[in-house]
Amino acid sequence: MSKTIIVTSAIGGVGKSSISSLLALNLSKDKKVLIVDGNNGRRTLDLIFNMEDDIFYTIADYDNERVEIEDIFYEVADRLFLLSATQQFNRTNIVDVVERINGSVEFDYIIVDLPSEYYIEQSDKFKDYTTLLISDLSIYSIRSTENIVYRLKKNMNFNYRTILNRITEEEKNNLDRDTVEEYNDYNDLNIVSLLPKNEKLFSGIYEGGLLNSEEDKYISLIDNIIENIDNVEDNYLDFKNYRFQKSFFKRLFNRD
Image (cartoon, helix red, strand yellow):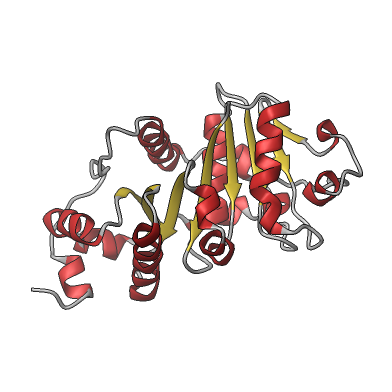
């Protein structure tokens, strides 16, 4: 049985698809990985993996039983496969498709890149999976992420982590460890990693350069996230690459 990870975010533009693809690529170093694009019509992962001209069959073709399961997987790299999206696919069936894949093809990991609006609507279907919530440090993104956590924990227990992404040098220098940990504890975000803003890496990703990335420092942070996902008993906050100074979250939310 594959380990399934749902990657979602409360708002757009915070690096959800980029992190999904980086996780998939890193995991595929020694595991067989499928990454599923749940962003209907956008085909974001096709672009990231430079596969726009190679995709013929999509998840909708399999869901509608027009093709066999082996026809919908496109090999991106050794041990890494992409299942592409289309506007014709009914996203309410995505869990059913993942379950059918689990029963037919052996993958070590299945990563599903999914918009938050669908994730919230169908949250009960994802309770057995690990969810990664991606946010940046904007007030709107943090509070929207907090709202997702509140709504889901109100109705069920679910296994989730939050990744704070696109942290600028100024934001990093203003972060305060004690305050972040306190915010983590009292607001239930379960923050497990802080990822710096890296325009060189992400512009390269969206130019189809993900597979040639040599941003080792950033990739090592992705490895830390993978370690955390694999060890569900050990939720830790990865602060080792940061120096903390001022009380960022206290200032951000005007808390004493």
